[in-house]
Image 1 (cartoon, rainbow, N blue to C red):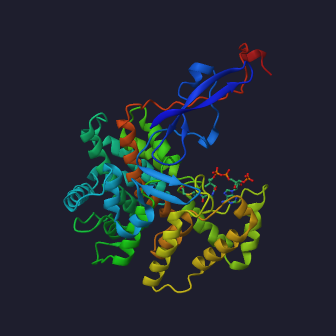
Image 2 (tube, rainbow, N blue to C red):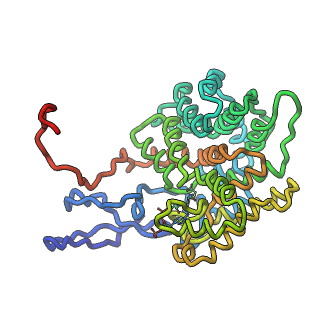
Image 3 (cartoon, helix red, strand yellow):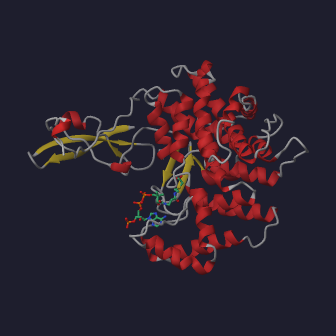
Length: 433
Ligand code: CMC
């Protein structure tokens, strides 16, 4: 970061001016450094939703939303999705470089050996109603990990931080699969150490103790690709939640539980579930026009789920990869003429030609196609966001580690524009009304 350039701010009330440093990153837009603004000017910046605010410095993920570019540590998501695998991407996000083959096998070995849950933790699931949403279960169980792993909680110790990170990455598929098994009334299936990460998850989801279960390699590869595509996405709501929670020095497992809670909302990770529900509600191509009209109506809260993004004002590069993966999965499973896929593609075609969506630069996002793939794999709709959380855990822990290591890190503490009552005298109860 350099600060040779500056930005002049003038207060028209009194004619005073201040030079604010302008910092350049390695690529992407520059930022105006307002850290001393309040001390110098007596004013805060006001930016609800943080549409113009950078909250941290990061070396992990770069997005150019206008061009539809997403890179992790400099590598394009398209290349990673096709040439890499999820374990490699995890290593890349955590350590900054692609692993050598020796580093990769050591990393895989360590993750594999953390996949089992503490046996007592398995009893936690039984406290939930059978019809609980799996995100509610995941949020609770991940938060509860903080009560089980006391040997990795000194966040100032890099080794402790890495052990907590490995545990989280390793245990998420087990927690996700257990949440599903619990809803089905089936016994939990323990992880199997000779399986890869995505393969192991599918195994724990679908195997039963009664018979051999062989994971379809095409589906395992598709799942792995979906995990890569969701691994990290810069300072989105859930990642910012993890960073904010972690900025107070909070327990890492609790911080990730906070991230899961934030991801759950339909404007964020919950959109993949919402897309499927929306497609089912639309039901047929004949009804598309009605729903497009509703999405455009300012007085109707309905939005086209899986469309639009705060940062991408172009096609989400992850959606492009997923569209192709979607066809591969349906071909492998021999699913011809999947009506929901046809409906989705027609909806996309119509929306992309509609001036409302064109003018507002609303393109399909990652959630538009992921749900159709999950459904084809037999994953129930309520599990979609759980899979997003499983994939995003590496991004959360990598961002959390980066934050803790950042010497300029402070507790996150935004300010506000207060518009409430100014001071007034207390009125005794008998004198009110
Ligand atoms: N359908 C219809 N209109 C939309 C949509 C949509 N999906 N998305 C945005 N708009 C309109 C919105 O009404 C607004 O119009 P106007 O300027 O006339 O008020 C304009 O486009 C800008 O929208 P915004 O809500 O101000 O933009 P935002 O950056 O705050 O919101 C978003 C981004 C992703 C929350 C929003 O596009 C949305 O709700 N999309 C549907 C939910 C979805 O697919 N979310 C997944 C996001 S990608 C994965 C992830 O982050 O987890």
